[in-house]
Amino acid sequence: MDLKVAYIILLLSFIGPSFVDTLACSKMCSGVSNNELSCYVQSTGCDVIFPTRVFPVAEPGYYWIFLNFTKNLKGSSSNISFKLLGRLSERDEYLFQRYIFRIDHIIRDNIGNIVSAELAFVIRNTVAQDSGVYDVVLKEGSYKQARTTVLHQTYRLFNTHSPSPTPVCSAVDTASLPLDVDAEYLLNCSVLGYFYPKIELKIVSSSDECPYQIVNKTKASLLPEMMTEHAYVTYCENTSFTCVVSQNLVTYDNEGNSCGFQPERPKYGNSS
Image 1 (cartoon, helix red, strand yellow):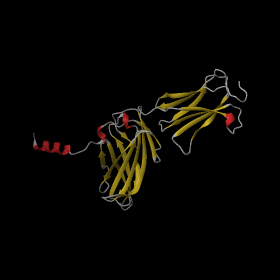
Image 2 (tube, rainbow, N blue to C red):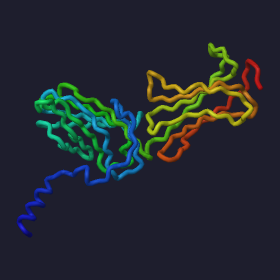
Image 3 (cartoon, rainbow, N blue to C red):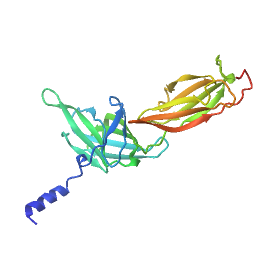
Image 4 (cartoon, helix red, strand yellow):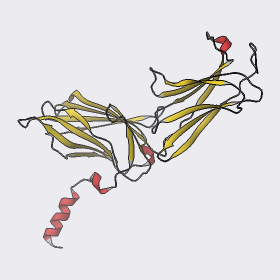
């Protein structure tokens, strides 16, 4: 073998894989301007490249990244941490397993000092099990320890293998509530979890003749991952109510799981 060719092969063997050698996933993202970013991808076997995040640079030096991955709200999590060492350079990549943190752009002031930088987070060659929540903390510090947090970002990855939204239904007799409404039951439908694309809840009746009034959808302020819908209903013979979850997946609506209500004849008040 030619010595020059052998030398090139040897050099290439020290170069880690780059995100550009796998096709980037087509994705839809929301929350691009805040600290909780959600992206949905339809494919696997491609690279998920999340939108970049800007962080301040007081004095280029040592940076530490801490990554926590949670499969779902009830699943276990894993912590991964490693250091970004040295002065920041544009297009620098730091690879750990299939995770890449890359300096996409460096912003300088009028005299050339670095004031901020853009950090990109990439998941290479994504698989179905990658759906979940990635909590990333970037800290400035010394070689021995991390000190000041300069960026805290949550990334949520959804794909066609993500858990489907499962609604929970319940009914409350209005006679037990401090309400002045012309209805016998308050129906409650709720879904717990983060979903993207966004989900919609809809309570429907099996009969057009049984009156019911939908209460606007709400998101509980103390539990932002819960979507709810309520309806006031009047009891009718042989009438049931269903709560259906729909989710717009790019070009079609996917009917998710549903749950049902079968109100009993009330002990108080009039019935139709």
